[in-house]
Amino acid sequence: MPGPTIAVFPGDFVQIRVYNHLPEDTSVHWHGLDIPNIMDGVPEIEPSPRIKPGQYFDYKFQIVNQPGTHMYHSHVNIASQEMLGLAGGFIILDPMTDGINRDYFILLQEFKVKGLPKRKITPGVYDIDPLAMDFNFFTMNGRCFPYTTPLEVCYGDNVRIRLANSSDQAHPIHIHGHQFVIAGSDGNMIPLDRRIVKNTVLVSSGETWDVEFTAKNPGIWPFHCHIPHHMTNNFTKDLGGMLTTIIIKDSM
Ligand SMILES: [Cu+2]
Image 1 (spheres, helix red, strand yellow):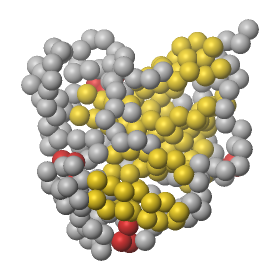
Image 2 (cartoon, rainbow, N blue to C red; image 1 turned 120 degrees about the horizontal axis):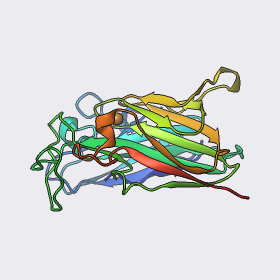
Image 3 (cartoon, rainbow, N blue to C red; image 1 turned 180 degrees about the vertical axis):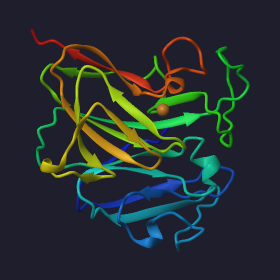
């Protein structure tokens, strides 16, 4: 599961105490934020500390970035720690009203669950192999469809969905029944006269994209990664994986 989503305002002074309950060193990198070198969380390169097992570190910095969508993730032994899910969302909210009625954050992740034969799902407790590349489970906020959270909106709502990818692969995220405007990229707002309209946006590893649309087509609409394999759980026949629904209730 991803960590909690953190929300702040521009100008805030932030102090985040990170406890290390792992059996090995860790750190947190505040991905996309313009913060002092010592707080950036890459101890192999920067003068930023390794957090030892059982210890903690207080990350302290001021928010100097504009409103937008960012992430945080481990930056020690990343091939294991990040691929075991140590990541989360970091949102800089706009203190001004921005006309958005519903504002969602979705973290995209992928995992290799060991011990399941392809096309079979047997209830049980399984380990994740963080070093494998043949992923068989694809998640939105830590869950696979049909256990993802539906995005419930009202007819006419202006909806923002903030997409972030902390996984290995790129995921083309597609909406049904609507077009969306690409309103933000890597935490940077795109000026109104430079926005483009699409219905699929490729979210590569490390990227965030904010998409916005008006819910004007009532129904229950899929919202998903378009790679067919990523829309399954362990390659089974039923829809699964990196997919949720947008439920638009008709106000009539
Ligand atoms: Cu995908």
